[in-house]
Amino acid sequence: MQKYLNRREAGAILAEALRGFANNINVIILALPRGGVPVAYEVSEALHAPLDVYIVRKLGVPGHHELAMGAIAQGGKPVFNKEIVDHLRVSKDEIDAVIANETAELKRREKVYRGDKPFPSLQNKIVILIDDGIATGATMKAAMMAVRQHEPQQVVVAVPVADVSVAQEFSHLADEFVCPMIVDNLHAVGLWYSDFSQTEDDEVRQLLGSNK
Image (cartoon, rainbow, N blue to C red):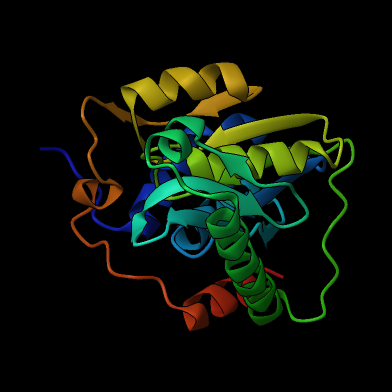
């Protein structure tokens, strides 16, 4: 089974697929932390484009936190998987509690990663949204919808690996979808990396700082 060595290698390969955006002053790269940051850093360096983070939090089903019933991005409204919410009969009170918790964590992470640095203007920009892969797509959909509220010129979704069904969906949702490895039955993004160790907050801050 073909795998990426790690996120940095995946980023270098993804950068090759995005080379048409190199040296364009209208391009800005937004990484979904934490795993998307090492990938996006390599792309940012190769394309000579500014890098920032766009924080998105999964809304997990109460009692089954790994199962996403939706997601929320900074400055955006929550996005839900209606089928999961309806099937598991998640109540409005439960949903509101999860949103409150994840919004607080989103704000905490924004402070940790960005400090007091103002968020860049995305108006009329070509925004390239990057993560280390897409499994269900809930997180990336929330990011896309929130970014579009900033009136960018174009929204490009770029990831090293995605399931074929998700790739087809994002080919319609995004202005452009770039993915070097589209697979059947992805299961979990980590299966497609030899090293998928957790990206820590310190590494995120270091990569963002060295990209200034």
